[in-house]
Amino acid sequence: MIYIDLFGNPPPRELIEEGMELTKQLRALPPENRNDFIDKHSGYWGKLKEYYMKLSHGKCWYTEAKEIASNYHMDHFRPKKQPKPLKRNCKIKTENSAEAYWWLAFDWRNYRLSADIPNTTKGSYFPLQEGTKAAGPGDDPAQEWCGLLDPADEYDVSLIAFELDGKVKPACDDDTCWDATRVYLSKRVFDLDHITLVDRRKEIQQSCKVKIEMIKNAQREYARTRSLVYRDMLKKYIKELRDMADPATELSAVARNYIRNDEEEFIRNIAC
Picture 1 (cartoon, helix red, strand yellow):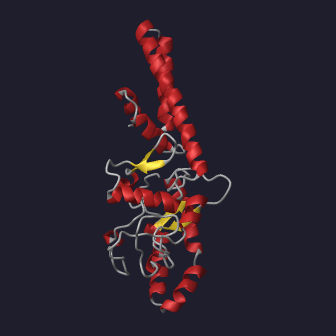
Picture 2: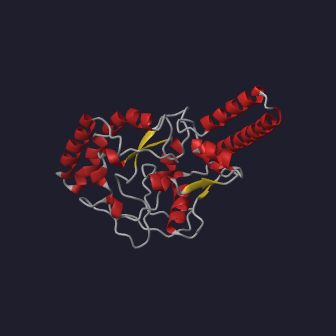
Picture 3: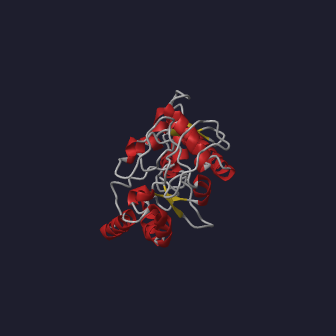
């Protein structure tokens, strides 16, 4: 998952105002006409897609992978239609809103750029912690105890780490806390441990391992010989490892996580 400063980088004003006008019209409709209106004006969020792609350097906000063979989707983080209860393949007990978040259907703050895998598996799932009050029209959605990690929330993104087998794990020590539960729910809903993602993460971890060994070897040889050749090699390898952790690089969070777990501080500093 990649952090996107969406709220600090809003889309063009004219598109925001278009969404506000559509929301105004939607609110004036009787409940039985809302879904038809939303479907009829579904082209609106398509107008925002290119802007949202630029914010993430062309990467899916949920997986941080680049979608090459198919189209990106504009996911409604809070579903525009009736949320489904999360039961199948999930042992965690959750609740969901009794109605759709229809009033957010044209709200730019509710869109997340998604690749095929998370968009297909998420659908209209939006689990909430048991006992939480679901947001309604006019409420602040932040009042909900949302079960999914939000890529537009920097804290949420910090909760994800990666095992050496390429699978997602909670970054917090307490595996039973609500934040850890949210990581497990997000794995399930966004299918973050899909085999293609896991395999690619393992490849990146292996590349990091090799590059770190090259850096340490070059460092030792430079210290022994004081040869500028090794000094240049050291600089080159460090730059290559830093590029792997650059936010514009695919799955850079995996590289940063691996680098930060190295035993030597000067290696860990490369991920900063």
